[in-house]
Length: 394
Ligand code: PMP
Ligand code: GLN
Image (cartoon, rainbow, N blue to C red; front, side, top):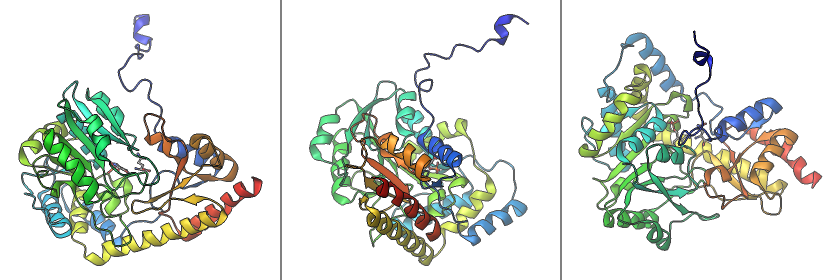
């Protein structure tokens, strides 16, 4: 064997991934493990998810085929998805032509960007943005144009859209409800965005994985339902969030047929398909009655209120949370840098959180930390107790 055969091939210069740090969720979870910290960083519930949905998956593992399901998803699941969105959001989707099952929302996002971005196309991104978005846009050859949403309201403004949209705009990628700010875009914000998409003939990818996790009687408005958006929106959902089973990685994509044809070409070479027993169980779960969805929201809202009250009591400035598993705190006056703050509370106080600056590509916000409240009461109380030390020391 030649010496060259043993040498690591040159890796520098890869356009996107070489210089990318490890995802903040993985680093913070590792830090939590190292320090025995309570992990309120990465967003996952500590419960088991609904028993009947897990039982449906276990049964299906024994009773349905474990060979490749159809590339677009099991027909039972695609029918259930269309019925679910008709019932909950009034959408009219053709399960055969306009619905596809993916391995999590992450695959759906990657596939949509690979399929729809042409090298040099401009893609409008809203900061704070989920950390996967920017590397995927860049890898697809897109040129990001940022709209920066600022705490505490994180609203979309006309002037900000006017500054980034042009005839080069191909795509807009929005997350609603928005992780990590825990805000929900309503008819005003979405109407504004829809008007720009129509005017510049842009396609919108709307990551709506948190659509069911919204509180205080709010209703989710899918971007696809706005005038002129039905034919130009790719809607993305995730069973992981709907059933508090984040490890399942069953996602869905909904789009008009001409878009779906292209999206399916990316999916067939990314994962091709998703485990059939999980698909079968999700098909069952999507048909659950309103009491399940209301109960899930009520439980999470109670946890949100418990953590918010605890953090406020010890001295944090807690920002409102309208949805998701998260609430955020304003660190102004407490720390200059959210990353250093999160490292410090994990290592010295035994609680892990996520620095929200990880969701801002341009470094414009560094004073916000995100906590996940989808945890048992005892866990939340213990975290607050530990964090109280921060203020005693100050
Ligand atoms: N988008 C957003 C905004 C998320 O918060 C998450 C995960 N929490 C995902 C996508 C990924 O979803 P999945 O686990 O289904 O891939
Ligand atoms: N979406 C989850 C969060 O925001 C994390 C997902 C992941 O770890 N990739 O915490």
